[in-house]
Image: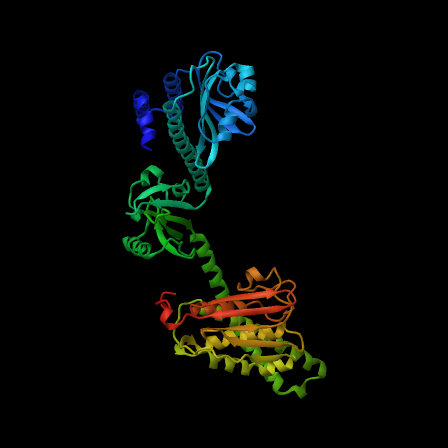
Length: 529
């Protein structure tokens, strides 16, 4: 290394100029390269300086400094017709001082351009080849290039490679910024970037549409102006401080305030923004107005609940009248007795549907009365015993798999859990072929259970909407019911702060898995749910 710097001592003045060139803040990369080529040709006493880009076999002159006969920037040649072919082959500084008297005399470059002297070095961006930095002239030199001259060119090539790398990185960064801006601007939801102190640093055009603020009116202001109350802003701050980099669930809502003072219900996803080194840059928030959607859902739910309640009274009267007729069946002719039985079955079905609708509405409310700490296994056993006779009627076996799993205490609602198990087991029985078996068992840690049938599996069109109300698969073999059973199951699982999932395959059956949070890992929350 000392030899390297000692050799460069002869080039103090050019190196001083190169240093000034490197630190000049107002010069573009193009101007710096032009000055570097001028500096190199003068220091080496050569006529032509070129920065080339090589994409085999194309050699392109990107930057050129030289006399009138020099190739224009943008000119291209076959790499095999240039001296730089040898520079790239050597992967190091390569030079010729009198080409006509050396082994290179038959080279196409000498024959076509008559360049007697040449010195060049490869240019790389990272590990990738960019091209070459080379200097040449039509006059031969009296002696080979000196060690100092060779290392001077090597130094210029290193500096230029670094400059080209920075240029490439800046270009890539500009492209990424442009792409990111286009993507952010195209998103219909409001996107807000805030600094670590929660001051607005960036917004997309949708923010003006949703909140009524122009970007200039928001930049630098605290995000508190976007909340309906200061309390909401402070609570969000606490959650952001405790959150990781993962975004919050999309169901999170907060009351937001527009520039004109009006408010709306915003669905929000938030995330901490960090560098790859973990440096905190701020917060990203995505906001969508769900006021109309929520109002529609409330109106729909109210309509369903009202209609169901209104149906309950006449339905009770109708069922009562039919039961009175059932008390004296001999007073009716056979045909009318059949009609009575049909009417009674339909009345019971309607009564069950109305009851299920009301149950769904009840389960959606955060009512936690009736919950207690208990083990899961006894409830599974009771539920399976209750449905044994129903399974036998259909020629299906019901089997509870023995388990040595632990029996941790869970916070459960016995009545609702029994309903959940009844729905899952009865569906599994209905989905099974005669002679088939439905299996039930505890999860390995005792905090959940599974129900498995060996039927035809869930149809594809039903799977995405299985837990929605009134969902029925077009090809599902279970045609009984009204499509509310699985929505009730999901509502009960949600009230227990649990999770439900399923695995299904055509012709192989379906397995449902239900898991509940253990007491020690349970969110503090039954009230918060």
